[in-house]
Amino acid sequence: MSTPASSSRIAGFHKLPIAERVEAVARFAGLEPGECAHLLDTGNLPAELADHLIENVVGTMNIPVGIATNMRIDGEDRLIPMATEESSVVAAVCNAARQCYDAGGFVTSMSGTLMIAQIQLTGVSDPQLARLRILERKAEVQASCDACDPVLLQLGGGFRDLEVRVLETRGGTMVITHIVVDTRDAMGANAVNTMAEKLAPQIAGWTGGRTNLRILSNLADRRLARARCVWPLAAIGGEAVRDGMLSAYHFADADPYRAATHNKGIMNGISAVVLATGNDTRAVEAGAHAYAARNGRYASLTHWEVTAEGDLAGSIELPMAVGLVGGATKLHPTAKIALKVLGVRSAEALARTIAAVGLAQNFSAMKALATTGIQKGHMALHAQNIAMMAGALGEEIERVARVLVAKGTVRIDVAEAELKALRAG
Image (spheres, one colour):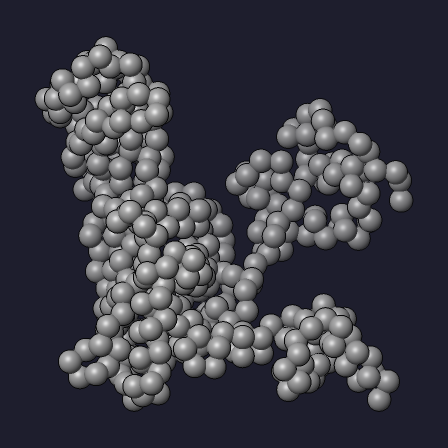
């Protein structure tokens, strides 16, 4: 093995073929031939496609795709592809869905497919007058925006509304213009960003100010996905389980330290479906967490209560900016298959489905916390990972994992000792 190079300045790196980029990285990091071969094996994503999806590609990161079963959404059965590396996430959705399936499953709705782009205006001497000047030009704003994307207009989308806010900041008064656009089956970032950039010089001319940022908002609160479900008392284990879950929810809704983990569990399910379908996990996560803090403090994304019959009712509402067209949804072969498995025919249907998955995930997490504790089920699945980390192969993995679970000690040192004993016996 050669001595690793010391400089990260690699001239023309972006112009190199993938194999030569890997060679350059190998020289820098001292990679072994087997490690280079691993990077060059891009799995079911063709190397040429990967090289066009992002910059400076040297390999791919394969994430397991699992299927959540038992999901009944708006009267229709669906199989849910989920891409995640975390144990128990897929199983949690399956279990939650099974416990409400006979009661009808999930009911969903959507506020619409509207996205917001913001245009920042500074250096205005009369911000309140500037606000009105912009609002008076609504017809011109609409014409400018709709001219940017005739195809979107043909599909029934396009400009919908204009809002202007006067914002006091540490850097002085700003006038913030919102253009509200129906992006239909696209997530819409490219469409609304293009409109904002075209509109910015006009706004500066109307007001005498300086336009700065021109970008969409990921707080997509005009694109809210909603899901609700009732879990019969008998299906979840009785009043004690129900009341324990309610107490867990009340804790999360009152305390941001608990809410952060509570909502992370929700996003375990949501992000897995967003990723599997080639959508933007970071945009959805940012919007969700911003929405959770919309009332001035960070709180639960879900709401839980008791029905008149004594059953447990859960609901969720959060921004869900996802699409069926554009980006990886149309390019990544696995994402295309995942969408085919889901069987959704609109971005709205996809968003509603994802919301239902988030609610299911939250149900399972709260139930585990309120009964056996989160570790029992999670560690039973995680034990297989630990067994593999210890070097177990084939049937050894399950045998070592069973011993770890039986002992209640899922640790790498214990797994190594058990594997050694297994092979010696």
